Length: 356
Length: 180
Image (cartoon, rainbow over all chains, first blue to last red; front, side, top):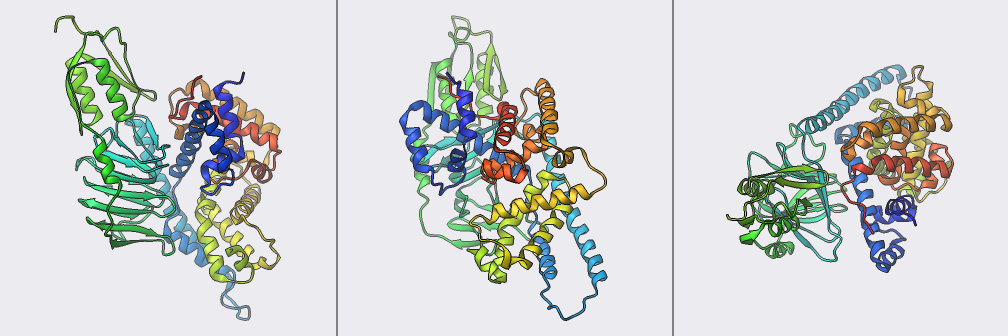
């Protein structure tokens, strides 16, 4: 019988499957929808293969940099010149043009390389800092889904939305990559600004609540506080970021390739979803129960030896604290330690005495 | 739509085609060579030629595929003209048998010392042809048949190439393989 790995592989090697994941208007959609509905195993395999495709796609997206808008324009200028907009009768000083084009290209190319070089450095720095692995959360449900981020911020993911972030959100910035629509309620922390990256935009936040739509029509709508929005690759020295205030909406206008800010009257539907995230209170609760709640609260697998910790009891309130803070509190209380890996969190220690 | 308008001499449709595709083309080009200036040169040439020959071009519902494939041909020609050949670019010109052999060896060596690396790192470490195929299939949504055509390989070899790449990437995914 073929293993799960083999089955996953055959999905990824199937054009129709990949097209379904990448192309919103895929003509194979109904086929795969009924295929996944057929058996639970199919649904699990499809979800896994889908996540893999999207993860590769996202890495490809963020692994390279877009050409800055100025260079896109400059290159088209050269093409225009090359196809002879000036008409065929006039003699052109050919050599001079060739030299000028070479100089212009050199300048453009060095700007581009500088940009790419910088991003590579950033990645190297992240690796050197020993940052935690990336977590991807995808809302495959039919409705919105509310969840906590490791820093205690809350997010409501719309149907089909997907975010990726560092397991612990450590590092100098809190960074989230988003596709689809999401509502954010960000815990203020000026020392560690919160950034959201979409296909076209970068949203910088100091602590506020707002909605971001990433994908075909990108926009940011602010409920409280304020955020600044700029285009990816935009030179902030030359053009300031757009500041978006409460009850304003900033959207990416594809035709102009610009950000447009306007007032908006509507309510942010997802805001109501946040209420569903309850604060959890534990009084003298077994450690296993607390860790299991933590697992679902932050969507991170937590492993520990149930036998070792069977006598440990904890009193704790789970709310807007960061995952790291809570882990520190718990491990300090029971004199244990925790480690992180790609597979989640592992709690280790010597357990607790019977009489506490 | 814009393709057909462009063919009938609509310059603004031509500009829209350029603006819609220049970023994916640039990204793809940089998978083939590390030289952004060369990619820009080829993109410029390609669009100039496309405009000049517009009346002779056939209709295509997928201008993106046409443009990516044409860019690869241009880059391939330009790279083979250069008197020096850098490491990864050898793959472009050399036969498939040879590169397949080299890839297997590299992959075998890599799996020894790569344990818990991120997907990004694993992708960067893939042999260039594997990177290219992965990029085309999972980023640009180009079918395996068309990848085979573009990379001048047969269909089964492309599947084998991607299969090898996926095996090398396996540890980098954050999702867990479902167990029965």
